[in-house]
Image (cartoon, rainbow, N blue to C red; front, side, top):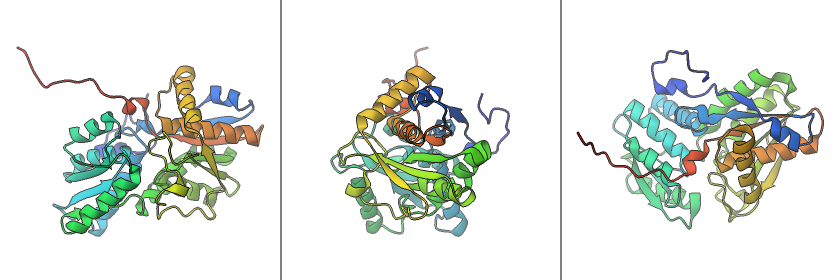
Length: 313
């Protein structure tokens, strides 16, 4: 049952956050037993992913300080999930949204964002998320008065969402028992904000950044930092204890096993996070309590069934 099932809210924005943690006992067994691995079910957010948190915070903060004025179009680059979150929030608040995304992002993400009435602009699939960043910046430079560019890779409201929400929620659920936090890096907002909150309140917690092991990888939404435009919000000193390279095959296998052994159908970035948490728990040994993130569901990576809005009476 959803944690929001008995709540009364004024807006879909009020449904963002307070996602449940699920214990992954099959993963614990692979890590050697006598450990705990908990995963935060971010697919329970109304837009279906962890990116609802950052998008909401960036939009609300920009409206509060006047950067996002009435009639201004919000534009940003995205590999998909943040775009869905922007599209949902834009529809709820009456904000026009333009998204720049690589042409090869999943058809599901393209279709979902367009369903909200969002304008899509495609960058080269050969340039990945960095190409989308460059094209979004070029659009803004051409017509700066038309657009508000939150720039999720540089916006402090991105990690702030996780400092205020994700990190605090993990502490409330696990408390002093948590020993490790492992999650993937894309914009890096999740690990920076959550990690900062954990370190401030539980300095003993080890924070591990999971990243693709190669620049040519199949982990949509994650960044190989050494070969990418490094986000300005990536400031790991004092927060991130180490980086853990993750092969694509290992992450995909972990996602498949979660579906078959836990009944949890998630995307490949979630597979990377869980595979990383398993490694961390195995290395730490008995007594480890590891938290990680399940950013989205697996069905977001499927091509949807074709349909037409056609009625026969």
